[in-house]
Length: 195
Image (cartoon, rainbow, N blue to C red; front, top):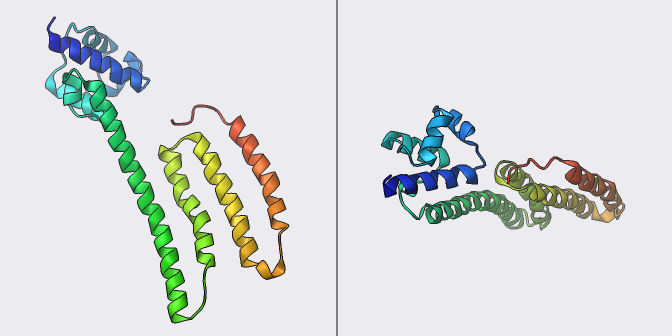
């Protein structure tokens, strides 16, 4: 048994377990038998370079992370890079919301001499609406609760500030049962949410 076989076997086991897959599940994803996966992980047989490339693409790691001894370090670096990219995309979309709010404010002030400061308040719930789909796809369940809570209270604050001359502070009372329902809903949801 060569050293490279052991390295590939160990890296394959780490990647499979990190992604919470059984040998059978991985085999079906790669169109191989679970016996083949088992033999690879016991270092009895080495997968072909095409198969290693297919495995690397499936796990979204570079091919070198399967054949080098420091695969975990490469995988962690890949995870950090992926997280940075996701964060950059989210911040880009969020900054677009605030750019539109700023342009609206400046346009109103310069062209119409109207102080539209409320656009910055309305940008908060709009930011939550932009953030919510990203959290559904990439985020954690607890952030769903935070985003929905901020959205709810910021909409109520926006309505209150928009209707300030009517002194509608009772709008915030509406938020209490909604927040209680949101808390109950959060703690009753199943735990199989993406991490």
